[in-house]
Length: 273
Ligand code: COA
Image (cartoon, rainbow, N blue to C red):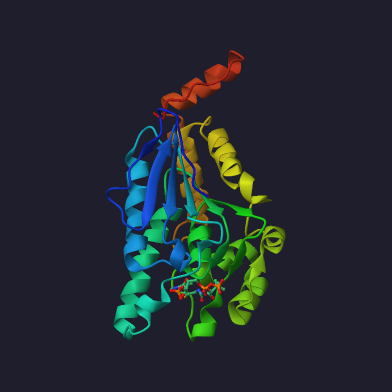
C-alpha cells in the first residue's frame, strides 16, 4: 500500500538505506521494512538499518514517536532471512543472534515510543521485532508466531524471553513448541497486541496513539519506558528506578509547566526539558 504525502513536513530519506524506507511526517517517523518479495525477511543488513533508523529518529528533536511496519499487504516480517543463515556455523549464528539482540534491545530502550504496525505475517524475527516495540497494533489479517522449531532452531532475537513477558510462561511455551501461528484476535486476547483494526486503519491507529503520547512530557515518557524495562532487567530494582526517575522529574521544566498548567486550568505545553 503506497502512501504519498503532500504535507510540507514530509521528508523521505531512503538514500542511506537499501532495505528500509525512512520517512517523517510532522512528529512521526515511519520505518518501513522494504523487501516485499521476501516477505520483508530480516537479513543482517536490514536489522542494522532498522537500528540506524531508530537512532536517527531518536536524535531528531522534531520526532516524538516511531512506527515500524512492513511493505506490502502480506507481511510485517516473515522472520529472519533463512537463506542468509542456512550455512552458518555455530559461532556465526551466535554473532548473528547477539547483534540482532543488540538492535532489538535498543528498540526496547528507545526514549521515544515505537509502535509496531503489524500489517501481516509477524513470524520469528518479525514477532520478535514487534515484541521489542513498546506497543503493537495489528491488522485483522495479521498472524504472529515463533516457528523456529520447524527449522531445528530456537528463536534468536529474544522470542523466548519477550513472549513470556507478554503472554505468560504457559501459553508462550505452547506457541514456542508447537510453532502454531497466532491469529490477530487471539494475539489480542493474550495481550500480545494492544489493538486489532481493519488494515486500512492500521497506520491511522498507530498515528493516533503516537499523537496522543506526543501531547505528554517527553522526558516523563522516556522515564516510564526505562522504569518498565527495569522491571524485567536482571539485577536492577525497578521500584528503585521509579523512585529515582520520579525525583528527577521534579528538576525538569516540563514538570513545572505540567503542574502550573493544571493549577491554571489550561493545557500544558511541554518542551522536553
Ligand atoms: N527468509 C527468507 N525468505 C523468506 C522468508 C524467510 N523467513 N519467508 C518468506 N520468504 C520468501 C520465500 O522464500 C519466497 O521467496 P521466493 O519467491 O524467492 O521463493 C517469498 O518470500 C514468498 O514466500 P512464500 O513462502 O512463497 O509465501 P507463502 O504465502 O507461500 O507463505 C509464509 C508465507 C510466511 C507462511 C512462508 O513464507 C513461511 O513459512 N516463511 C518462513 C517463516 C519462518 O519460518 N520464519 C522464521 C524464520 S527463523
